[in-house]
Each structure stands twice: as C-alpha cells, then as structure tokens.
Picture: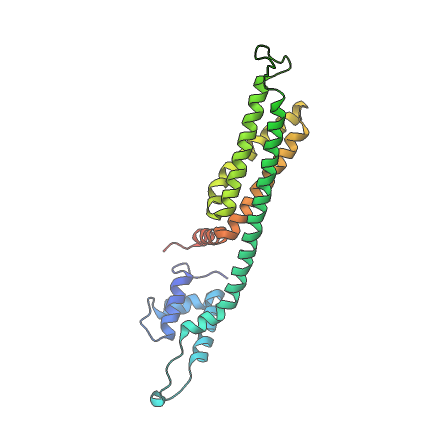
Length: 238
C-alpha cells in the first residue's frame, strides 16, 4: 500500500511528535492523518511514541516535588550497551588489522632482501679493477634493485599505516591500482603462456595486502563513512 506522495516520513513523524507534545504542528492534521492511514512505518512510529509517552507519564501532582525524568539518561541507558559492544568489536578488529599489516610488511621486506641478493651476482665486478665479469648483467641487476626498492617502500608504508591507521585511506587507491595493473599483466602472460610462479605469488601478496588495508580502514572509521554515505543515498529530497 503506497504512502501519501505530498509529504515524506520525516515531516509526518515530526508532526506526530509535535502532536504528542501539544506543540504547533508543521503539517495540517488532515494531511498527517491521511498519511498515517496509509503508511505502516509512520503508524509504528506513532504507536511507539504513544507507548513511550505513556511510560514517561508519572501522573504525580504538580506540588509533589518530583522532577520530570531526564530523557538523556534514559536514552543513554538504552543505547550504551549496544554502543559498547560495537566499540569493542571495532577495537578488536582494528588491532587485528594492524597486526596483519605488520606481518605483511615483513613479507615485503623479506622479498626485497631476496631480490637484492639475486642482484648481487649480476653486478659487474673486477678482481683487479681492470676486467669485468663476463657473466654480469647490469640491466637485470638494476631492474632487481628497483623492484626491491619498491617492495621496501610498500613495507615502510604498511608499517606507517599500522602505526597511524588514518594513513590507510591514502594507501588503498595506490595498492588497488597496483593490483589491477599486475592482474592485467598476469592475464596477458597466461594467454601467451609465459606466466611464472613468482607472478602469481606476487599478485596474491598484493591482494592480501589490499584486504588487510581494507579491513583496517573499515574498523577504524570506514563503517561510519559507509553508513553516512548510505543515509545520503537514501535521503528524501525536501
């Protein structure tokens, strides 16, 4: 059954709250009643509001000296247990994400050190300062050194993000773009039949890094950002 198209739920619920508090209503009563007759959501709001109003009505005489209840304390008492559970869950998830980031950074460091070791055998060396090792490959050595440098940079960035989780948001686009490009190159190599085991392992490490960053971001402040964005998408224009 559809709702009245002239007004939205927030306007009607504000008018119902004003009716309970005996305040001027922002909408005519006939418009509110027509909407209430068709809208199940607003009827539930009306019933719950009436129930809460009756609960808070003590019926004490005016001179009894009894002060009205503090609504803020009632609201806090109702939401505090759920808020504490949510905060504890997020704190545990954030701690886990930071630990994983540190562990993943160690893997990147280990990989970089291994590449530097491989590059050492390709650098031209001369025992007497006059001859060059014929097996040396300076170009490959430079490529390995560059690859090791970029892995060390990733490791340092992950350690910084584990220390300051607010930095994670800046790392996620870079790591996502890096994974996307490497995935595209892997698909190309699979098609031409030149894929190597190191490519697959590197892509999996990138994916694990991106997942660890996403998990840390969500448990830091990502959930609140997503909820705010969802509310904005579902908001009704005035």
